[in-house]
Amino acid sequence: MRITRVLSTALLLAGLAAAPAAADSSPSASPSDDSSAPTQAGTSFRTATELDQGQQATASGSTGDYLYWSFAADAGQRPTVKATVKLPDTHAGETWQLDVYDGLRRRQACQYGAATRTAAQDATSLDLACTLRTVRAWSETWANDPLPGTYYVRLTVVDLQSSDLGLPVSTEVRVDSKDIGGSAAVDGSLAQPLTPGIAAKSASDEDSSSSTSAALSSIEPDGGWSSGWWSDRWVWTGVGGVLAALAGIGGYALTRGSGRPRRVPPPSM
Image (cartoon, rainbow, N blue to C red; front, side, top):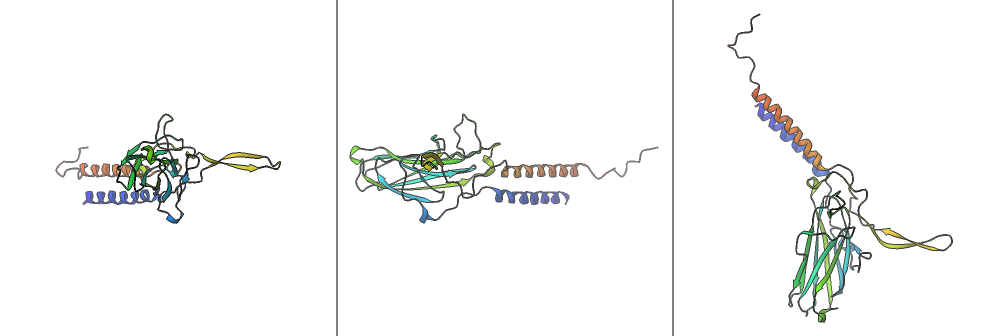
């Protein structure tokens, strides 16, 4: 009976501790209104079209164009970029590629997904996908780990015949993230997210002379950038400590016995 009470208490405490862990974890980006989704793409890193996670952006272009979008990814998220290319009715075989770069314009490797595919001559569309590694809150300077900040998506054709150059195509791009949580937490955080300047704006002073300054990207996660040392990994560490303490109490209760045996005489004075 005593062991049953100990185990019941342990399970109750574990459930109560796990509840705030699920509530405090950063939620994934919620789908936003598609009416505000971008309908065009940029042609370079500096003119990349900002895209919120959960939106499906569309753009029209020509075969051979470089199409760019940008989105924000926070620590603990595992972004997945999906793109669909709608090809013209008549075309030869061609290969399309989907690349993802971080705020430092370092190309990020895809954990899985077909980021490069070849369309057959009779294909009407082509689907590409790239799932990045989990975004880390902090990394060594020599590492190429994905860090919180702006990410760039580049979609282009990498192999085609000259006769197909300039043919009209339409594209669809969507970014979603899975919240990994404390299992990917690290000890440390960036001072600021990797959000570089994306444009140059001019300002006039009293002497009517103009000056230019970099404008930082305004895109960020719905709940803002995460910061601080807290993660749900601390909750599970606390739960483990409580369970270890209860296990020690239960072991002591099982091994201590019922006291002095009845037939043992008391010690003589």
